[in-house]
Image 1 (cartoon, one colour):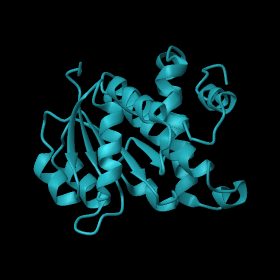
Image 2 (tube, rainbow, N blue to C red; image 1 turned 135 degrees about the vertical axis):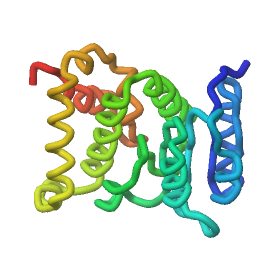
Image 3 (cartoon, helix red, strand yellow; image 1 turned 90 degrees about the horizontal axis):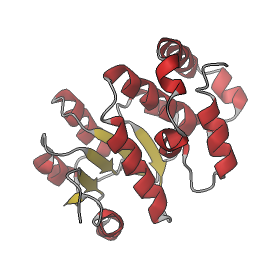
Amino acid sequence: MSSNTSVLIVDDERAITDLHARWLEESYDIKKAYNGTEALDQIDDSVDVVLLDRRMPDCSGQEVLDEIRSKEFDCRVAMVTAIEPDFDILELGFDAYICKPVSDPEQLREVVSSLETRSTYDSQLQEMLALASKKAALEGRKGSGELSENEEYSNLTSELESLQGDLSSTVANLDDNDLRAEFHDQNTSSSKLRQSSGQFDSSE
């Protein structure tokens, strides 16, 4: 039986959209869009989570995301894309970045569950987790030298540290499940997930 949480799945590859819908339909109210234009037609205040492909021919995921944010829909957005994260993601207003292919249904469920939970947090904590997602995505694909030389990444790190300091007591109470999807990669072990979550320990 579906919950009241509405998930909009957007991908121009129909097979992927339909597959992800099947993985989630027992737990959520599912909407599907097979291109960016359809996504913009379907997005409204009833949508809680959007799984958004980044590269689509008619209207890109970035354009859809920009429209979602400009209209101030209160939903969390995960980019689910084959595009490897680069420093340009720092300019995008997503909440999580997941690289395709997603071969494990549980990974997608964890992402949606995490974003569903995140909707209950205040805006400052949501912002901190979104920044953490960007940081983790870049660190999973970039070397330390490249990261250290990038000014935008340095600014991201500083902003994240500032938010962590402001929210240290709240973050210390988040459990592993709250943060799991932010750092979940299909090639990442559980131990690395816990190491990533450990960066939010207020004692550090």
